[in-house]
Image (cartoon, rainbow, N blue to C red; front, top):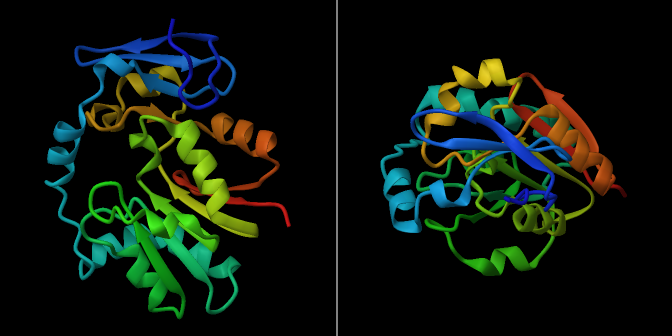
Length: 212
């Protein structure tokens, strides 16, 4: 029996299986997740991340990140202080937000591991293409809620599960570092549980706001 790594429910079931891995789904929050015994260890995981080449000068990468940057910029006050959680080896979103007059802190478990930045509150936080990698999304989610001031924004980017038919042919699940997969219903569950405002922007951007 596998408990859900997000809501801790024991009410889970088989969802899908391919030649690489088996996937389970929580019947409470609808998270789809990989069995813990099929995840990479930390060394293997970091080796995979080390192959990423994110260049702040890459206009295509900036356009990709603007899908979360633009709606966040429309909602935060001038000269706000934010944190980019899981910024990776080539922080870019933080640079884009700093160019618009905001102050940014960085955290990444492998590349910017200074935990002191996690000890304060921010006006907003961003986390792009991170949440699908989390082995313990429950504790990290709670950490994110504690990082943001009342009335503050959380801006996330991740591809969303639609249904098992789409999942079967979904390239996103084939990345060995992707271990949890959210759907709109999963975010709606979290928003209701934690009393957050929720907005979906396009197919892969999720905005949440803490109550004042």
